[in-house]
Image (cartoon, rainbow, N blue to C red):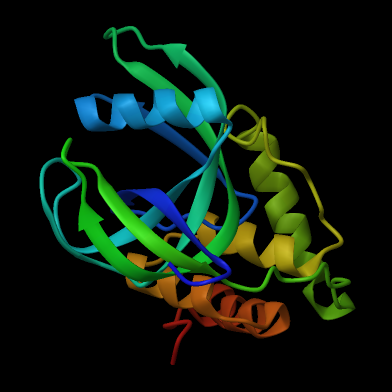
Amino acid sequence: MTAGNSVISLFPLHTVLFPGGPLPLRIFETRYVDMVRRCMRAGESFGVVLIEDGEEAGAVASTAVVGCSARIADFNRLNDGLLGISCVGERRFRVDRVWRAADGLNMAEVSWLAVEAPTPLPAEFAAMADAVRRALDELAEVYLHVEKKFDDATWVGARLAELLPLAPNDKQALLELEDPVARLTALQTVMEKGSDPIS
């Protein structure tokens, strides 16, 4: 492991997690129940990566290279007896190396990507912040553990990207963008024309 890298557990999903965003999960595989226990005991996060080929249960053939760490904010026992956890996205990372542990858990050596600095929301995107505010009013329970930053371009863009009904690959491309204003511009195109945000 090189300086500045970390080893984390991976949770491959058919979804894209953005920094600051919510992630409710229903945990039923033993390897992930054990992972959650370890993370909670040690106060550690785990990594979420988009599945490109494979299923969430069992083996995963391939995942995206860029993901986002998730910290457990709350947990509860669901009606079906399974473990439910509420997580919040923290920081983006790039996967450098992946292997499977003895218990079947996917592990990775990752390089942490630069944290996007808070960026004042340009006036031309004010309507997008209003759209996010209205959506979060209706999804208050899901966004219970999410800090609200309606004047931050990075935060507003991430919330829109996770809320809009985009294809997972498009969400992944938005996650990988380094410029919060470029992300908002791409999302504005989607909202106005319903076109591919990456075109």
